[in-house]
Length: 197
Length: 197
Image (tube, rainbow over the protein chains, first blue to last red):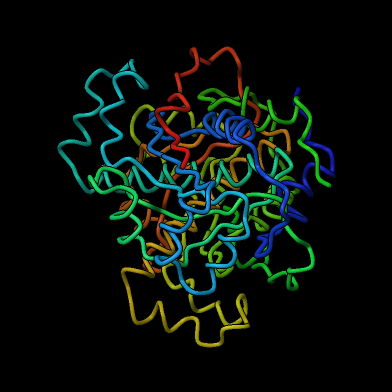
């Protein structure tokens, strides 16, 4: 029988983890990026549809393409972070379904015939995979700074010019600088967010 | 300096965790639901906007309201599971921003003036919180079976008749029955899903 993880693990994943604005100089290696994908890929998606795509910007040149598309307050965060990832999704994810969900050979028809369903499925499941990335990075001892302050359409034009992939959110990854943190924001109470029926 | 979690923890969260269709009779307690919320609530959301809402169906009467709104293949899963949660989001999440994001007193204006932004922000961040729920449940030693096979509009009409909250996906929570599992689905390779720049 599985047990709860120990208290330190729950802290590292959730209770004391923070969204860091400032970053130490310690690098994130390509091996760590592989480890990160090899964890996050196991997170569940509807019909194993796996629409998430992840573009890791490691070099000053790659980040320079992103910087003019950011809200001003996010530029320094991206410059400082060892790695910034564009969490995106494949709008034609269903083309992989015959391989990913082989027990329903016609699964892709439900999406090719319904673009609203295809779009919400890509966005929902790509976002789930973005959250798996955040928590997988924390599980690997990394800190994460997710960001929504950027121009999605311009990022799509710059990084996904053929229109197939769509940007969702960004996340800086590395080792956070505690000194840059403000007090933690409050959370909704159980009674505000949960209903028991 | 934070360290990677141990291999058992990475297995429990990601590598050997499965989406269970069949469930043991062992119950999930209200105390566990409180522990679950007290972990997932710490996951990051844009501007700490926290749109996620979670309706836990524990009784046969509560589940009976959901069953006619499910795809046929999901009815038995919901009946068997100790608890089924409706992951939803608050379309007027921005009404809490003055309390949740106090450093920007006018933050809600960007959403009241832009319903497309409000909708995508609620859906994106509510979905992130749904993924935090999945991984928080696993961190607590529980199994999870997320499901998208249901009629969102009918679930909204049944459980959220005033129109403020919107259903996103469902998840069964409990202790999975290994015997009901099929072979695990394949995953996209690193090269298929990741780009390094």
